[in-house]
Length: 271
Image 1 (tube, helix red, strand yellow):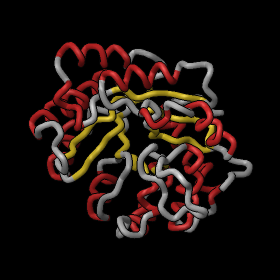
Image 2 (tube, helix red, strand yellow):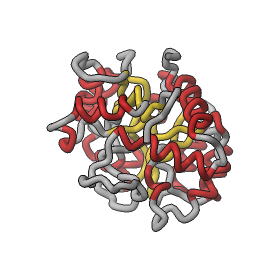
Image 3 (tube, rainbow, N blue to C red):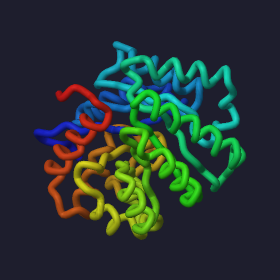
Image 4 (cartoon, one colour):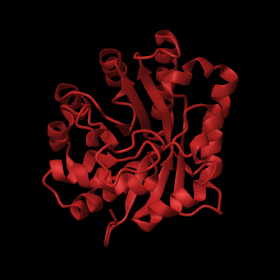
């Protein structure tokens, strides 16, 4: 699918992932060719946050690029004082536009729940102090997630719960806290997106953004099906089209709407 007369931003791409090593520039160009003109590169650890910024600054790559910096809940155990200090320094760079990816993931517990809670709280406190938006992750930890976010909500400006896959009830709780929502190719998988098609209708237009989360979450309903299981920027229009369908909007309407939201959320210059 190619967008005509519209540009869209991928707010969550794991461009530091090894699966992009062989064709990182080409992958970005394929996305640009179908209208994906801008990317927010996700940082999930000290190393990937540093790499995300380096990629955002790499003039040899196509597209407009920015980065996030933080510790994913899986990497919360790495969040020691020395590493925290180095990640904190990245937030001073104008190309780093959000704190995170951070949050809670009690599904796999690669870091203990306590490590995750402690790390998440540090990120929330940093957002209060710095005024940067938050890039959030939640899985199987809704109660604890809501408790911490609610406690700090009056102090920080904006936050997006990226790759939202939850229930309508959880969505309404997030919206009540005035949070933004990121939708991925999860919505293109009828086996896993049971409540998402109806829930996505409830998201106010000025709080909805889209993302690939590539190389993960290849849209399952793409036809013809790609030979590789790797997701990439060029597939973001498929996600846009699916979300627009469930919201009874045209892809062009949704593209323009999400672009305005991205500009406002990340405080980016309008193209």
